[in-house]
Image (tube, rainbow over all chains, first blue to last red; front, side, top):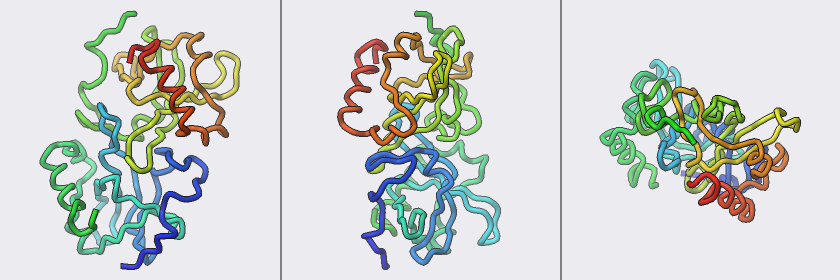
Length: 132
Length: 132
């Protein structure tokens, strides 16, 4: 796995962000790409815990390059690493990993935040394949 | 101060939210009103701490009803209480309180997240006039 760490996040804030903060409107719409530049999807919205104000998930949407309909992948915030070279969040999910990743249709979004689903997502991205 | 608590937040999630979670795109653009229904402003974006994923501020924009240019008011997340009757976040900032509240121009947004500014905002909305 090749990642040029010198290019990843925490650098040169641009419009809509500071060194420590980033605007929700800047995250929304940002692409998610593999190190190779292949597009995996893009961030459609952040899901925020009402009480704590913590971002529970960044929802990656993704339509059709595996021949399926639009699907939504809740990603833990910590998965997002901005890579300025890619102008995208860098996430090396292979096609196989994407097929196995927790996802939902637009209508299933109500399931987000339920205990079982949280555990499933944490287990998938947790100490597992992405070493988070 | 009259607040019909039966109508405030944590109820009947609608599209884009669940009982515990709310989408960033649903917060953006939502009005901020006094209990009387007077509009104070609207939420333009959330500023999120890059490392922790915590919402540092909801930025309320507000243009001109006191005769000033567009101004941005960073509000601590905990200040936002949705009131379904108002279809808005309910915040009883008087005109005088608004004049005194920490605000910034679009270009000054870089100051957000700096220690001094954080303290100023916390002090204003903290154990102070809004009893948070």
